Amino acid sequence: SQELEQSPQSLIVQEGKNLTINCTSSKTLYGLYWYKQKYGEGLIFLMMLQKGGEEKSHEKITAKLDEKKQQSSLHITASQPSHAGIYLCGADYAGNNRKLIWGLGTSLAVNP
Amino acid sequence: EADIYQTPRYLVIGTGKKITLECSQTMGHDKMYWYQQDPGMELHLIHYSYGVNSTEKGDLSSESTVSRIRTEHFPLTLESARPSHTSQYLCASSDTGGNQPQHFGDGTRLSIL
Image 1 (cartoon, rainbow over the protein chains, first blue to last red):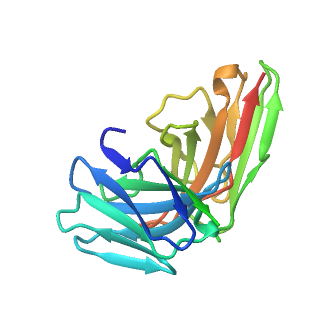
Image 2: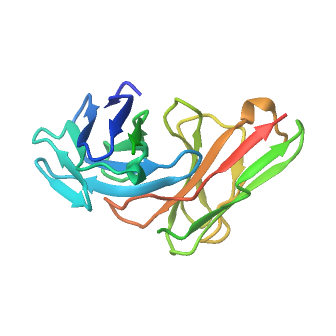
């Protein structure tokens, strides 16, 4: 979708390296959801951000929402093969979680 | 892990057959969703339900239909399958109220020959 862009499209890193995935919106976000998807499977909820400047962490994954609420970054510290998969961001523009606009995803491979 | 289940996981079937994809959740969520996901494309919402006896079409036009007779069950039906229906179908549910994340099933990968 033009409204929500993820970068990079794909990423290959060596185990132990840090990495960042970005999700940029063309308009102000009410909420931003991060999910991880294993190939051929469903989406696993990681984190939800709503407030400008908000930052949340789960194990070695940290997500931030910038002050203007138009971009979010997902940072993985000391990547492991278990982090491999597709990371998707979903934008809530209406505040009711009904219609999420989804990014195309970032495919992450972690080489041991 | 969320308790939402989709069956079958994989289905290969011939053109013209009637298909029902099952989705059940044990969390008591009022909201349920069906998405279609194709390789390299974003998730597209095809059906949405606020609760029992409430269904709406999503943003992507779909020839499928849904029903919501029970809170926990949200099946999707294709009356006459066509090759263009080949895709991954994902079911999700969420609790009522804003800022509630959607929890997804593992999906059904459908191939129509």
